[in-house]
Length: 383
Length: 93
Image (cartoon, rainbow over all chains, first blue to last red; front, side, top):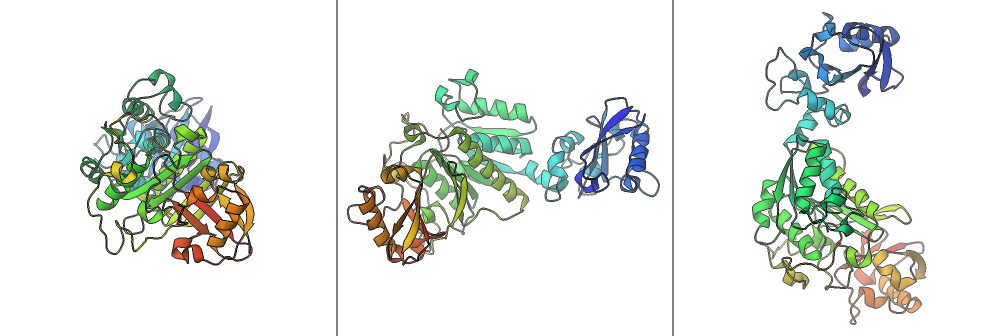
């Protein structure tokens, strides 16, 4: 009876890089033997010297770890799926490998077998591993807005298992949002975006906690909200909120992952405190009306997905501490020419917020700063 | 100096809908006034009547912000790319 076996990437050198292979067998032990016959050397990877499966390797039959079944004696049937998942950095600190044991509760920070399976495509990457996955689970990320940018950002963070996602949003779903805002559906029209977003995120991944901040972010509440999170993601639709979130994130010492869209254009960058900020890039906002909003000028729906995915990727890198962050670089995306360019962003020594002699040491009145009506007033335009 | 000029969507309407075009100038300031001659009304999109660039508009010479070079006096060379980027705010709603 043919059994489909998932081969993790570190073992694929034996299977000519095949991710799934099919072998015959009536038990897990027979499947493993058949794998070794077909791909000599396989047994050395999944058995230790006593011919036991070492604790750093989990074997799943469908979605259950075989230790919870009958170990390698577990019988398999036609059409079953077996997955071999090594814990790349598991062990005593609660890695995926330590989840096993005779029904003993796993350490509280260990990944459950369900999590190991759910996140296996991340975990098998050396840059993530079970430790990285636990960092994601322990991370707290605040997303400003649950619309065009906040939607894809929050969605990819939830799918990746970022444990706590806070969302600041006070708007309700409008028919004109549905052209681009992936968390909201036709049946959600008229419902609070926050409620709609939370439902969708938890349907995608019930392990994720979604914290609701049903209010506009203001100078009065920003410093009560932002310090509770590790990273802030900006998907705001107006300049007043952009300057407010920039200042509050800097004053709270948090990294800000910024993105903006209009027409066929997108921008993204990351501000790490002390390495430049939005005020270094744009010292002052345009007067109201000079730079149009998305509602006035339009925006390509798919560009929100591009920029939101880039923002989610930067959050992921920040949490895991991998790669080169998009710091001191402004990424410009032109969807019509499909050109991606980067410009340098420098910390401005004269910046009133993060410069050498800062004059902005607390939040100000951003509506006055931007010459815009206060946020509490219903806003006629939508980005 | 013959340079390539890139503009983002917002400014395109001032330059006949182009995203990229050729112009020239020995400095950034000269380039901007030449562009305004090519496309009358361009300057008012990015600067005040006093000729001072709006603070929400950045100009890049290749990938460097000219504020950190010589501002509008920054000299240009043949083949340079100048990008004009106003701030964008779109996102949530």
